[in-house]
Length: 479
Image 1 (cartoon, rainbow, N blue to C red):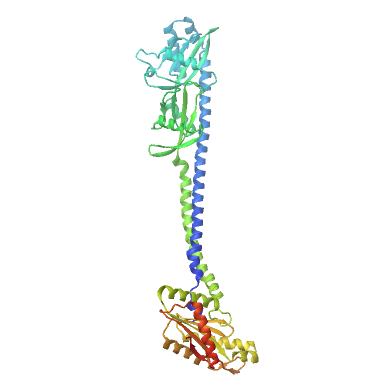
Image 2 (cartoon, rainbow, N blue to C red):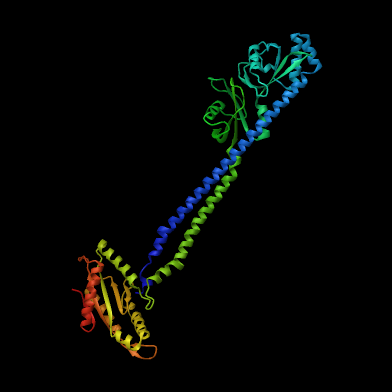
């Protein structure tokens, strides 16, 4: 039969089994690259927000400290307060300190003499011990640690529970230097709530003396701040990492807050993944949907291109331009396939080579155009004489070849006889002239019991064809 009807092209399978998987793999690689890049951008955005918020927090904390300092400087110059200090009466001074605490919203107020010893103090009851006082030694130790221009964050345990305070100190002159006032402002959840309103971040404070474990103080989240701070020690200051808090992932940063070498105070700054990553997750869903759609579109496009363009071109490459039969390349491919079937499954087949008698005379006397018309006429008569599973090919010149899937000699004889009879019928040329040619056919059979390869069969069929030609035409079986 004509090659386009009988022989499937290899291009389809190559595209389906090679090209499409490669394209899909490339698209998958591109998909994961986009996802990873998107997540990295999201994480960079999260870290950027965290860093910006931490810097804003430092600024707000510094501004708050400066405000407390300036307010304390102003109020300690109040004449009423200075008069109370001048009385040197502890009860009077304590009353003045209580009034000063209320006006500044301080939790601890202490008057120190010029030697740094406690003269009087006033503490909110929630921070006082049973006698209503904070231990003088603790206050004097904080006064010794105080450094002007530093954050001055130190813990205090007035009631056995460690609490963190922001301390500010201002000199008292009446009119000569008379001592100093030390004010403590607790960093509690209310303070952290104010910071959160400004920065949109969550905070927790922890502190530790050299060689001591971390102590947790105020926090705006329900988390184990000590373990979070301990984990943060493996990171450089200002470097973010991830913690899970209440079942939600947070980006966390540990920020050193104290300049003192005696007590390390760390502010653990955190922001949840959710609000920041939500747009990026939606983008991931869009990327996923687009990638799946692109993969589907690629498969459909390749298959349509294969069916509409590649397959016809591939078939055209393996088709004889003049007769539209299979060419030598196509016949060789089909022979390899038949040989493989024989080797694997023991399937027999036959090869027949045919040469036209008297063709050279027509070609020489009437011209190549007439010869081409004869070849086309003969080619048109051959396909109906074999089955669809068989192959008819023009190998070149006036030589034709048949691949027939049978090893039955009587059946092959019938087919060969029909071919000889059909070819010898007169051919009418376009100019009205009538010519006739004959056929010489050599047949080689590859049965299930024989082991000939395709090349050997072709050689045998070729030798048989020449014997037929020497005998005046017809067909001859190879011995």
